[in-house]
Image 1 (cartoon, one colour):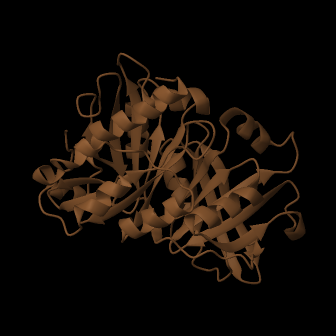
Image 2: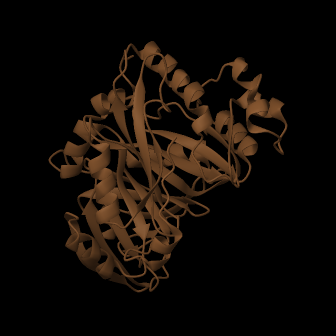
Amino acid sequence: MQTLTAPASTMNDTVDFLPLQGTDYVEFYVGNAKQAAHFYKTAFGFQSLAYAGPETGMKDRVSYVIRQNKLTFVLTTPLKSDHPIAAHLHKHGDGVKVLALRVDDARKSYQETTSRGGRSYLEPTVLKDENGEVVLSGIHTYGDTVHMFVERHNYKGPFMPGFRKWESNYNPTETGLLYVDHCVGNVGWNQMNPWVEFYQNVMGFRNILSFDDKDISTEYSALMSKVMSNGNGYVKFPINEPAEGKKKSQVEEFLDFYDGEGVQHVALATNDIVHTVNELQARGIEFLSIPASYYEDVLDRVGKIDEDLAPLQKLGILIDRDDEGYLLQIFSKPLEDRPTLFFEIIQRKGAKSFGKGNFKALFEALEREQDARGNL
């Protein structure tokens, strides 16, 4: 693994022209937002937050907003077959459309990024209601994915103008999910470095970790990845591309079934991964299975941890360590019938890395699933 870190003097002297406060929300385009909201509430423990649709003046689509701690999902469905979102769904299936980033100044964020080559998605737009105002702007990134810049410090409503509070009698208990840790994008052959340059030049991110096909490979497949991080480290976007192997890699399978580049998975943070995964499994979420042999020598590799190993092994939770501490992580199976979007659950105990020591076990587990689908 190659770790890339800018010299301290360079980092300190560089002005962060795009200061980000973190992920504001993740918006999914889905075939049936009402059913998807029910699923995420039931299976993941989200709570009802806000709704927009014909009843609120939005005639062409509906959006349900759900929240758990600092984690906000927006689920959006078109109401007519000729709507652009319908074309997006026909091509990609359900998946992530918007990675929204909270900023102090959406106008300045737009100007800074578009002046550096970012392609405009939404010019600065002010939304107002009796609760104040939200300023939105946006740029395109890989595939049909976009970044929205959200300025909401002058707004007191549940989500944003155009939405009304959504109250429900059905409110399952939370599962301990806290916030977005990182979002991983899959891009096409030889497209990783161009998108790394996009995040460096347009958004001022840094490449903090790089993995090549020697780091991320099995007997059959390989990929390469670079992790991009904004200045304060609140937002991290690993970018994957395929690498040559004997058979089809997980990135190639994603690109085939998503029909293009897009968000492969969203990593959700928790402070108690055993509790969270127990809850998710009890509610029907399926995770990749890890062979018992992984746990025979894992503590020899990672050293002492606070948790008992037996519950981690029972659940299939992976463990890795870096110079800062260790992490616990687990990966769901795809949540859609197309083998595209999945979720990672992660608990960091000081570690800043992404589980390099788990890559082989993880990718072999993914390959077993690919093989069962006939796609390896």
